[in-house]
Length: 568
Image 1 (tube, rainbow, N blue to C red):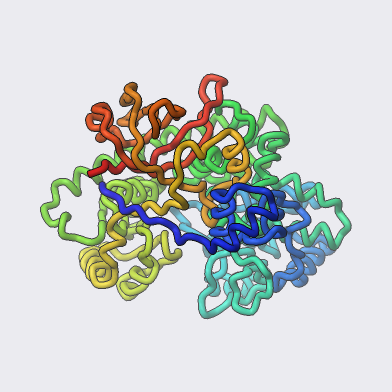
Image 2 (cartoon, helix red, strand yellow):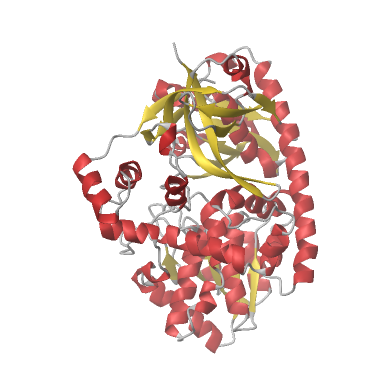
């Protein structure tokens, strides 16, 4: 699939010049800093040297006083507290954090994760009945609940209070909970709006520790879980999230909790861990329990008290992940087959597929796989409890949530945001929904959004890349939304003669830009189609990131090529 290359807007030259002098940094890296809003000495210092003291006062968050008061009342009155969270990585890390902290200080605490298949996402009536039958009078809901007005009202009628800790966009009506912690509430003065669900749970513990003069290190023990949440939930990695990710990754390397340590025993050792290590290894395994079996396994893993117990659960979680990968591959291949056999597909602006036997736990992953290949707004649906239920994923620049909302009269339930959503509808409404959604997308999507784009930070010569340059570039991490690994563009490069295809159609190269110049090792994942031209010695342009390649205990600098464009 061809891609559009777009250069970021060049920053103000005067600002770059001033910053370059102020921090004694070359102009390429100073330009990237200014592009990212780090346009002064103080901002750059905070960026390169994040401090835990940079975290905001948790009591600035609307409802925090009330939340801590209600927890104090519960503990003083020997009431049972239920810590409740969603079954994904953010939800299970949030529950592990808050439950893990409270259970060490108060015995009458338990946790609850809803079943993906019988209860679905968020707070369920079934869970409230379970809480009532088991004598709980306070539920702390994490990573969910901001739209659960009816559930919170029902709980209240059963004598159960709610504290809601959520980071999703609120609706028109805020649930009548004892406290609602969500910086995205219109009247919440909290200065940072992009915390993960686990991040808000972390702020709750910070506030509790401050109230009770508990040493901050008792909360900082959970920074590794906060980092796993930040990386896996794709929240922007700046401000507080940068601090949490920075220190959480350090803790993941030096003092991980028992569960994460057990997972990492099967992972190649690293001098330090990155967001990618979480996204591609830890996150999928924590998620797999909820997709394939019981997400409570993930919480048990992350709150385990011994290495032995953690290893036992980690073995189960790894088995769940292997099953997940098998389902993922089978369903993705089936979906590709359905598309290739559909003569009308080429003319459609959306992809909506349904099969009643597809595994509900992996349809979101399959939707992402289809976008990688066909690049259009995609919904994958299966049958569950007599209904069609699905996961939706979007392309850059298209508001998926609004498109689904335009079909709301055909839906029983939906929720999400611009790039990802979930939905449930009656099976008989499915044909009409597929056509309506296609009409909405066709009318509202811009053609440019149907072609993937690569936005690069700057054009540079390969000779710019020196060990010193890379050592500073590394300090831009942790990378993720809001602070992606800088993408560079270099023109007129060529392979010195040892291009080869490795693995699953990956292109391995040795590149130079000048005769007798330095040679750079490079890898282009999925770019094997370019092998013939590259092997002929034809020059081309590249978009790429610069990274370290860890292999067999050796670390080498490597260009990770995102796309190749031949000249002429």
